Length: 215
Image: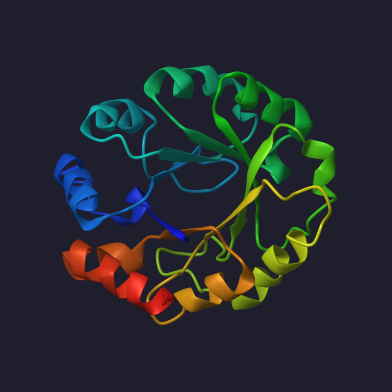
């Protein structure tokens, strides 16, 4: 079954405790965090402490997407904070296999993220450390960044690479109930949704609409 991962960066920051509780009730599968450094990505939204503060509220997996240069220093802290999945950017790591190995050794699922314009390399090089691949389907242009459906071809082609049978594919950027079926057709296993979940503060009904659209 395809998993829906609401992105807290798109939610109101006034009461994240209530937001997480609402997501649990609505049947979210994963909680997604975007952690930016203002350098690799020229914005900053959530602080890393959010992972620690929200961890006691739920047993749902915490998926932390590090949009930062040289992220290795933060990995052990994220382990202590309770992260279950951590992805780093191919473009931001001089030695991605080494970084994935550090995450893997911490007992965390290790992911490799790709910006829309970045082509996929042969991913077998990153085994056995690679647990999932995160494909971004928007550029960080603005809060309402344009959904780029053509990028989903990377999922379809990537899944054809040999030896990746146990690697999951995650997509992130611009998914709402009108277009979420695109991600399913491409072969995504996890779909990160921001506006699609939090629009009009109707978390429960929005998640139901997303699941119905996937049917």
